[in-house]
Image (tube, rainbow, N blue to C red; front, side):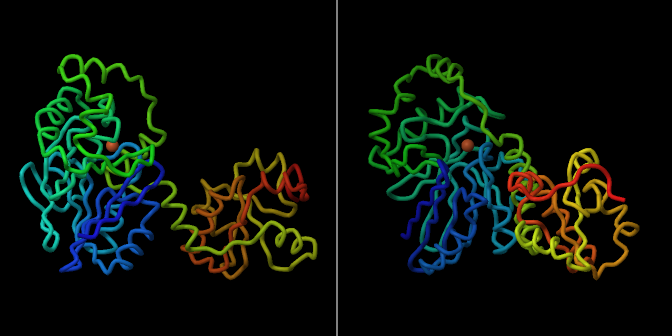
Length: 346
Ligand SMILES: [Fe+2]
């Protein structure tokens, strides 16, 4: 078996491959690491055949949907998952065959209603059901402390204590543990009485994950994250540095149209001299009047450089083949002490 563990902050993903057949499963992949997973699979001579989420993640962005599109392989989740892009739903006691490897599904609700663990001969991928020195929280949507108690004490912890534990989260960089070690040392497993366990879980007072709504929106409904939209737009346009723009403006470069896509009040407060105002929200509807020449070089800027990247990509899609985004924005422009002009342009 080939086994790779990839950490993204505290999130852990796993690439599990069969040496004989070169087939692999990728478990709990995270969106920012797509190139790393593909590179790892190539390095190990593996072909990713299955994408598996152990549950609906509320705290990071799953890459299963995006990778499924690129690799044309199925996304697997538990039967209880509501994500519309899941191709194969599995249930307790079933197995996923990855070449000669057998990934056994253990249904372990509690952290979420669709949580499952995956068992290999010597190890368990425990998702967020059992963590090293902790357990998944049960206060997010579909969480249930009583179900988690049953999943842990009624199922997972009854397995061979020598099984290695590889969780979906590990903030302390411990790598892995064993069931035996967790039973002995994991503070959350010391309350074995159901009522005491439920009370402990109800009183953890954890903060909400930073990207809760965006993660649930994308992981449950198959939407795109803001950073995905930005990185797709970034790949569609070229950029110009602030220094380059400043010197081109100073030399009075003919034909360069600078476009401010912020709101009018921001433009009036101070804009790059000579810039034309066309707020992002009106871009598509006013573009024919305001930018009649699609062959003109248009440099787009906003406050931070993000909205302008999206706007420049939209312009390219609309046929403005020379739309360029400023690498930076009005805030950095002002910080650099570059020329700015208040009021309207003539
Ligand atoms: Fe989770």
